[in-house]
Length: 103
Image (cartoon, rainbow, N blue to C red; front, side):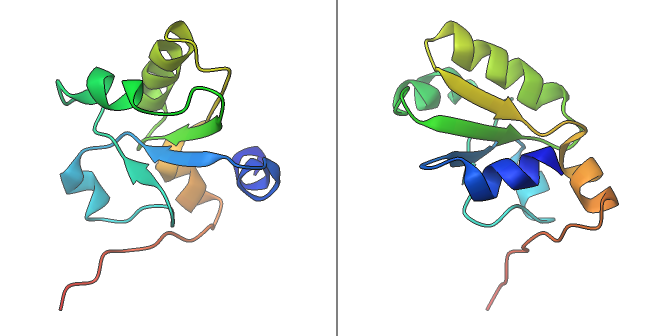
């Protein structure tokens, strides 16, 4: 619930999904960037982000997003929030997700 409020109230925030592309196929939060935490490119990708913006980071259960948030803070990101319990908890609260559509 707190994370959902932050999505709606933290001005200029960026949603960051740190799950794998395979997990992304099963659903995501609308408007999220996807930087796979397990990818060797993860550290390089986050270097390109604006460290002044607030980031709302999530994964499936909260473990990877917590680790990603720690790395981001170490690299100088000022405002990083995580979704406690991850997308599983989000869905458990009854909040919806978007899915990829194929044509």
